[in-house]
Every structure is written in C-alpha cells, then in structure tokens.
Length: 235
Length: 402
Image (cartoon, rainbow over all chains, first blue to last red; front, side, top):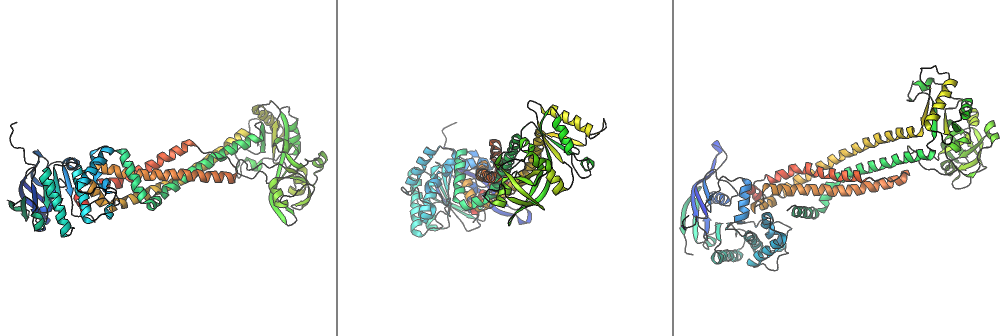
C-alpha cells in the first residue's frame, strides 16, 4: 500500500433503487454517482419525489440499492444483509431526523445512551459518554428531562447528542430543522457547522430550505432520481 | 446485555402498570387455580390418610356383597349379616371387638329444631373400634343394648343443630317416630376422609334401629378391631374362612361379602381423590392457555404502538436479534410476574379453603416451581410471534409510522 489519498467515505456508483415491479415499477434513483470525502458538509436538495430521501436511506444503510455499488470507506456495503447493516450503522453512523425521534417517557440521558447499549458498552462508561455528548450540544443539567419537558430545539440537540455518542464517522441529518422556527433552526445549524469545522465531522444533510443549505460547503441537487447539480459553495 | 434487557422490560411494564396487570390476569387466574387445586387435593389426601389412621390400622370393614359395588352386582343378591354373624366373628381369637352397623337416614327433632342425620345402629363396640370418646353423659348399658332401648348418643353437629350450646344429656328427642333419650355426647372429630362431617351422627342400640326404624333384623356391615398383635392379613383370612362357612359359599365360588382393611380403603379414597385433583387441575390449566393468548394479544398491540420506537432502535443499530430479545423478555417477565401473583393467590385460596374444609394446608415446592416454569414457557411461546414481528420491521417504514 502506498500512502495515497484515503478512499472517499462515501462512493456511490450507478446506484438505482426501484419499488414495485412491472407496470407499477417506480424508479426512485436512476443511476446516481456521488462521492463524499471525510470532513465534508454536504447539503442535498431537490423537490419532493426527486429521490433525495431514498439516497439518504441508502447512504445511511437503512435501505439497499437495487443495483450499483456502494463503497463505504473503501468497503463494498451494497450487498450487506439487515443485521450487517445494523452493525454498520451502530459503529459508524449517526442519525438526526426531522421529528427528533426520541423515545418518549425516557430521559435525555437514556436516549443518548441508546446506541451505546447496542454497542455493548458497560453502564458507567455509557453514562459518562452520554453526559459528555449532552454537554457538547449545550444540554448540561438537562440529563434527567424527558422529551416532553424539552423544547423542540432542545429535543433536536438531544438527538444530535445521541448521534454523536456512538463516535460515528458521519452524521446523516434528514431535514433536521424542518420542525423548528427560524431562530432555533439557525441555532441548530450553528451547532452542526461547529461540529463540522472544529471536529471535522462529515455531515450529510437533506433539506429543502435554501438558508439552511447555505451552511453547507457543498450542495447536491436531485431531480427525478438523478444528481443534476453538484457544486462547492462559498463556505 | 440480558440484565439490561430485563431491566428495560421491567421499566416498560411498570410504565403501563394497569394494562400490564390486566394482561397477566389470565396467567394469574390459571396459575392460581392450578396451585389451589393441587394444594387442596394434597391436603385432602393427607386428611384421608390421617382419618384412616385415627380409626386404627388394625381395623377391618366387613361388608355384604362383592368388592365392586354397583347396580345389579353381587351385593344386590348377597344376604345381609345377622347379629349371630357378629357374635361368631367376635368369638374368633384374632378379633378384639366387633361393631355391627345398621344405618338409617332419619330426622332428629327437639322443640322447634330439627336435623337431618344418619342414625347408626350399633353397640358400645362402635365407640371402641372407631376410637370415639364420650364428652359428656355415658355409653349404652348392657340392658339397653339387649332390649333395644330408645336411647342414643349424639355427635357434636347434631347437638349444635338441636341444642345449640346447651347440654343435651338426659333430654328426650324424637328420631323419626321414636322418642329417644340422649344418653351421651361424643367428642368432636371434624371432617372425614371424603370431607364428610364425621360429627353428624346419632348412635342407637342396633336392636332399636332394626326394630323401631328399619323394620328388619339385617346388619349391613361390621367394623372389626383385631386383637393386639394380630396382623391384618391373618385377621382378614380368619374372618373370610368363618364367613364363607357361615354363609355356605361353595368352594371355588367367589365370596359374597368383602373384608377390607383400612389401608386398602385409604388407598382407594386417595386414588379417587387424585383423579379428581388431576381433572380439576387440567381444567384450570386451560385458563393458563387463555392467559397466554391474552399476553400474545397485548404484545401484538404493543408492537404496533411502539413501531416508531422499534424504528429508532433499529436506526441506531439494534440488530433483529436484539429487538426480538427485548420483546420476548418483556413477554416472559410479564408472564412470570403473573406466575408469582398466581402462586401467591393460589396458596392464599388453598390456605383459606383448607381452613374451611378442616383439612391440612399442604403446599408443595415442586408444584410451585412447576408453575413458575410453566408461566415462563407461556411467555416464550406466546411472546415469540409478536417479538418476531417487531424484529422484522423495516427501519424506514417503522420510522415513518405515526
């Protein structure tokens, strides 16, 4: 092995994803090529039905492409089965969703601990790491609060802390500010940008808001299951 | 990891306390019913043994007819015994005492009170053979026995029905159409081998019953106490030889009477008891099955309700096996909790019932352990399907679920 550049973190080659068969076949992704390097902050935009969420699910190993190759950090993962993909998500990926997706009636700390439980990390270490993650998103002192006792912005911070707790290589954010007002949205985006800038965390974010996409360093636009625009932005 | 899962399951169950309780009610009832049945059954089995032992192990029952009674059987055609038969048995060297028995169902009346009871015609030997003690008053005199005088000795139940707490001795009561003086009152004895009330009896001289109540000189059976140091086998043989001769049973043909020792009677009663216990327990076990279906139903509802939660868990990296384990453990913890409550309830019911039925309370560790194992099995069996459904959910669909 030479000291060549490391492989891209995400390398999609000719990815297609179809639902249904025959007449009813729907082609959600139609030959997508996309490369994302370590440390990038990529925003994915596009009208609804353009395939951006499908692409996100495939990048996040929640879904499997119908055809094409997906190299994650140089390793082929397109053919992995359910449990192998689960382990991949557990070890390398963090998710942030539009609806926060926290467990109800469960404290912030326990929510953040969740991925660590499945990693098999012993209780004391788990709690310490979850506390650190909560501190990182500015939620010290809220460890015992349940989601219903937190504002939307705070809930999303808990979700980000949960994504960070497992020490992932990449965070996938699906409309992370979709449920928040403008002020909170910008606060969340500042947190995300900071993670990207100071810690070099790779971030892939789906959004349909231009001012949120503006925080990213690269903008990928999907239309009809294809990448129609891919450019580095000012940031 | 498993401890973690059990803790998680306990939390989830506690959060839905009322629903969890209603869910396990089926298992609770099933386990409680089985435990109560078996415990009460065991208690009454011990009661049989104890009450037979109280009669004495060297007591034989001699009945007219074949061993297996039934309509149209030998017993119908077999002649009854007579008092001369009783006297002949008493002559045997292996025999200590013989009580002739002739019973007649009658109503005893005193003032406004009456008591439907069974009148036993016998002699003082009845008291000896049956180990009865006289609490107050006296036994029969020889003259009363010989003449068939209208006197009686009554049991505690009859006494309390007719006299309440007052002393019945020397009072005149009416039995059927016969006026009869109470000579004595028996000590209380409690429930008998089949749960019957042993104190519900009136003893009269057998001649009085034959002449005044039954209207025939028949003796229906004999209770024989063997002489000291005589084994039941020898006693049985002596009586059989004597009775075959007296009843002119041809050699080679079957006895038209039956001699049973109390051990045989005990084992017969015990086996009847065991069959009944088994039967009732299996009916009770059916409700365990119903309880299991209840758990399955609620677990299925729970999986649907918690689809989003399952989606979150899958997204952060839970494997199918981990989700399956979580729901399976939840079902098992639920049903084992049901088992614990059921065992406690069942033992409680058995303790109260044993008190009322005056039988020993006989809990068995084996059946309690079995109940736990069974309720755990019910959880695994009926929790598996819902758990597998949860584990097979697609993370994307599950996350989208509202």
